[in-house]
Length: 207
Image: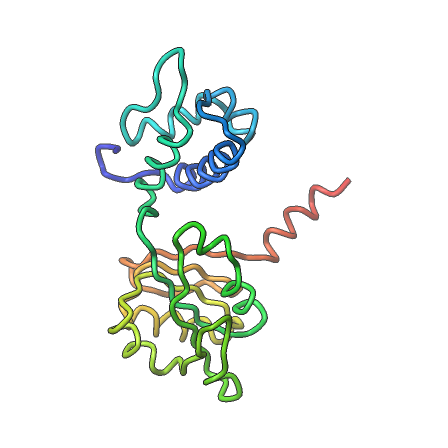
């Protein structure tokens, strides 16, 4: 780990990419991999790959490379994915439904354990096996569930209130799909997924 205990966010993003690639290699029976192999599969420079790993100790053997299963397991531990991570979902609309039914989340130990909404027409109905709960009860429900992660999949005008309810429920990391900048306490980490931003960048690159 760095002296200040902090790891750059881009490094963490790349670690997740390495995990995905390693899973694919493992499924094809590949047992060892080199940093050059990783570069070929990800487009991430081999030196950058080695630097990313260096934050967390020594990996691999010179002249041999990296054991695929061991490397993926170690990265999983670094990202705290070796144990199930409970997630609260706020927003049971089309996007929320897609997220709740997204099987790869469960495959990587992320489990949406409760879904919340403020729409009385949705509350009490089922969302991929989860009963949709009243968002006003999120604090009480999470006392029982103990989730520390949350997903916001609501319109922009409801996102700030959703974030405040998640924080009140002791959630400390939030994935925000709403196109709005959230005002949250400093101890809470937020990752924003802005579809417009991503599409705008892609649009710029159109020939």
